[in-house]
Length: 65
Image (spheres, rainbow, N blue to C red):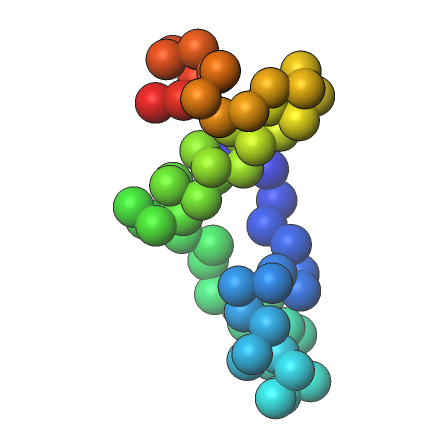
């Protein structure tokens, strides 16, 4: 898996309210869970569809899940 963004949109509410949060969170490991796996799969499908000018319905079953 690639390195996680330092200012990820999913944590935006936290780091917008507390500017030092990203620096303080560096000490904690970046762990995977079901939600992060689903998000990664969704991003992969979106990238696949966009780069091939497809919509999600046209994507092959092995990519769409």
